[in-house]
Image (cartoon, chains in turn orange, yellow):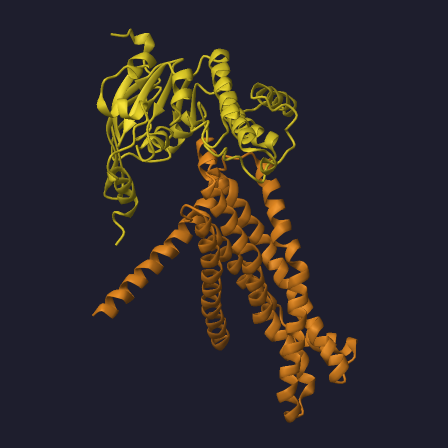
Length: 265
Length: 268
């Protein structure tokens, strides 16, 4: 019985949490249109966030997805070689990177860099009363802090995902040229033939949703920070853990939906 | 009775505030009039910070009314509340300057967002406000580069930015050395002379309270135990008032235990 009660409590907690995220997202969207801030400031803060979230993540996202591209190619080649189907390496890399790994790995990197930073920034502002200060100046903290982050993420996450697709394919190409009798040109053609536009848009849609979820969790955790420096650490940790969990969950749902939609087509 | 022209700028009626099951403020009633400086003093855990937060709308009372310029902020819509917030300034204990903005940008923030003044005018106003608090030339410093006393001064300048009708100070001299604290007291006295605004100062520093106050409200365990002009409170025979003013320690540890219970109650 106690187990059931605990399970019920956890379920209730999760629903409250998701509700909190949705509320924050909805409020930010509303404040995008009826912002108490001047347009210039909103744009300024969004660009600033976009630089930090997107451009700042480029080197590490490039490096990681490039290596993941090589890994997928190597792992794939291991099996494909036995079937004598080495020429399929290019399409294996192309599809797994664009549909799945590009957006997912980008999301994980962005969680580590930006989701945690959002929670730490807003949490520290809670502790130092800066959030209260914004409120007493009649400047809504959500409009001031969260709306620009949502905007920046909604723009930058898909861009990063597309870039990571490119870098992943480039990684696969390195293996293709060195280890599988491809030339650069033939690898690019093989990749192009393997991909349809739908593969890329699937990844883009996913990464957009990931970006919104990461922002919502990071900011929500920041706002729910209690008093003291230790609490900032706690909310940063939960931001990272909960974002990863939610991103993976959403990925399962999306991938299932896309799979079912493909089956009926 | 005071004539209607002298309606209070802040009117508090039977104000009660609760955190969880624990009531922090037990039905406070007082008024603050135009141009008056009222100092709220009390020990730690007396509820003075909670009172300040409730007066500016950061905490919701469990019952009672807080009327600022006639508007009950406990029932005001978000829009009305924002309108009131533009008429008040609050200088936080630690300054609470936005860390990502320079000192000058902190002060221009409410001016840019809430007025239609030209950028050049705003620049001049920022310079004037900083000069008033003795921080000329610090526009481009980041808040982290300032000392504690300077951060408080910068926070005063920001609170003054919109020329508020009511200015609130949270522990203006807490955590400062005596000389810097005296400087802050002088600054508050100068502001009092320069502007005809009402000021509410929350502090536990007796010397500073007696120096800057027109009236004193002495809070103890969430209730007002003395209220009136400085001399009246200073000469009050009330035993708790005497204990506070004469700095006599409590014989038992009840206060500390009570204070702890305030945080732990409801946690099991």
